[in-house]
Amino acid sequence: MAEQPSNQNNSDEIDLGQLFQLIGKGFNKMGVTFLRLFLYLKKNAFILVGLIIVGFAIGYGLNKITTKKKKIEVIVKPNLDSENYLYDVVEQINNNIKSKDTLFFESIGIPISNLAQFKVSVEPIEQERDKKGDLEYLELLEKFQDNGQFSDVIRVELLSRSAINHRITFFYKNSSEGQVFAPKAMAYINSNSYYEELVEISKENAIEKIKENETLINQIDGLINAYSQNLAKNNSSNIDGRIVLEGNEKMDVTGLFRLKNSLILDMERKKLEIKEQDEPLSIVNFGNAQEVKTSFFGKTIVLVPVILVIVFFLGSFLKYINKMTERILN
Image 1: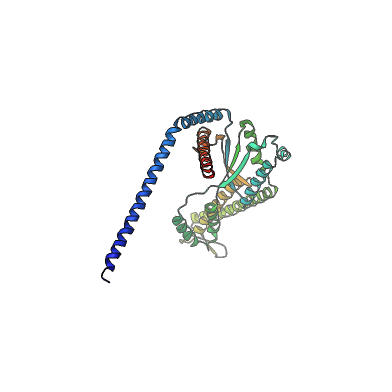
Image 2: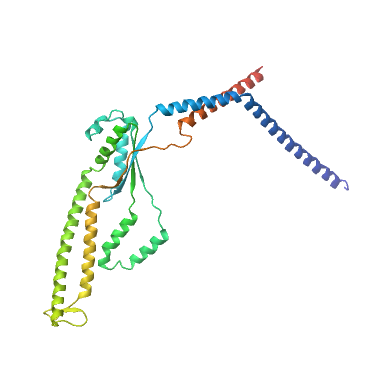
């Protein structure tokens, strides 16, 4: 019974010794592997350097003879809830490009035979916003939601803050054809009859609203002129700033001025709305042609040497596997 602790200590020492031996063997194998890799690279250094030089030369030559892709970016603002239409029509154009539907493009004034070089994409332009500031702003507007004079202001402000611009990108290779493709395709996108009709109705409503506001402003000006004349004569006027009409009914002049200012602001918004909503998609900026930038490893001058080196390593690995297989079988 007294020898049990001694045996246990000896067992622990043996286990620790075996553990250190395993760790040492692991480091030895790593060292051997590193040396083999070093010898392999040293043995094939000239081949690898040659492949890299040849790859750079081939990539440089291909870079000179291949046509670089270009693009034109158009920033648009959808009107009258036309966002879904925008994405659908862009998908339609891309599908017609993939199916090489030359009749479709000829019908919209784009007689191009090589459709494979073209592509159209659309994406929203996300804007960084101060969410805390927006929340405080909405809480402030909520205090005036029962005031009829501020209802239109609140609606316009909410729409302006929630509206997102979109970027339509036209990709192409041939500069002369691309300069024709982008404007014609954009004109087709903006030629939807349904939204054109909605734009006309919205424009007519805005014009009618402006006329009504002008009539109201003229009436207010008449009342204010009458007040001024009565005030000058010191007749039918009170010191509290109210007009006294024939039926002894009073009217607040300050309120008339506030109403007039709100009508003028509404007219300015309606005029801006007519200008902005002239088409289903308002073109914020129609960009110029620019070269498409590729990533570092996407460039031909870098991609070709990388491919050649990978092919060499793959060939060496297959050769090594073949030798090992022959040894095992023999």
